[in-house]
Length: 330
Ligand SMILES: [Zn+2]
Image (cartoon, rainbow, N blue to C red; front, side, top):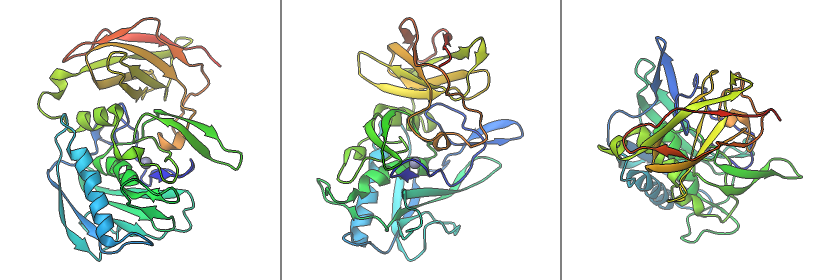
């Protein structure tokens, strides 16, 4: 889901996320399974209507570009096929994946959302739908329109969910006096809070998005060519749950984030360009916690931003030594 300002959450509550950058997962018989497509190409339909200023053909073209952006990631192996336009609605469980406009004036902060139908024995996605909220003004202009939201940018974000990706916490926001948050900088299309009207930056994936989709749908060689950093975040010797762990590669400039996902504070960030990384651990305080974890998850945000005391090497094709990052209470 893409929100104008924080406040909305993913429509489906999955048990607990399993991996870095957040992949959706379900637990079956005590095992955590990634929620993902298991057949490629994934077939999709476009709803046969537009919205004010955007024709049905414009929608289909913008969504096609959004799918092509994910399909073009060289380290990921997933493809899409446009089947045709349909009078079916997004968010109906009808066995076909439909993307298009729907009017939701009651959802004042939601630009778009993604739903899933999953096989709960295997985690396979069998259907996923996306609606774009026609209560907002939209544009598909090549350079964007300062008065309207860029449909392609929001489509790239929602297609990330469609693939099984959750939100990334790589972004900085500030609270707005009138409520909600404003994005100051974002290091991932999968950051939960959208840029404002006219902004088209999210048409392009960032390294964090690319690592997320590649680890979920790895192309042959992805794991051999990239490296992993893993370890544990502790406060007073106790694991920290829900800490945001960021790996920065000073050589490439890539910034890739993960989370501690268990009570023992364990994290793992895969898909890194091999070499030394700066590791920063920070509390999840730039968006609503529910954008990342279910409301029941006891996420710890009461600690200070901490840099690991030395560079950490992500070796090609494997994981380096486990690191322990001790954080101080706020
Ligand atoms: Zn979202």
